[in-house]
Amino acid sequence: MTAYVLVEAEVHDYDRADEYRVLAEESIRRHGGRYLIQGTVPEAVEGAWPNPSRVTTVVEFPDLAALREWYDSDEYQAAKAVREGAIDVRLLVAPGKSA
Image (cartoon, one colour):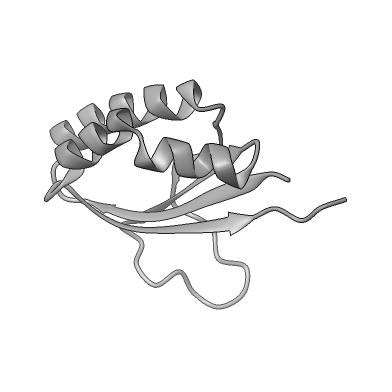
């Protein structure tokens, strides 16, 4: 069953954010993940998006085990270290629905 990472992020340092993105993308691909949505400000059709400077990313993994392996990997931990102080992140994990 697929699994998803849902990210809400606010960037404070764009140079370091770019460095993080490169490292994160490489680590995601190595662990079988793919971006469904990457760094966009969503359009609110009901209610309001709480902060227009926050962007959304959604990443799909083949399953929860692959997602957890990615998140715990040395490659992603290195990306997180670069991200620290440059991007405020809320990261959520959700399993996909079985058919």
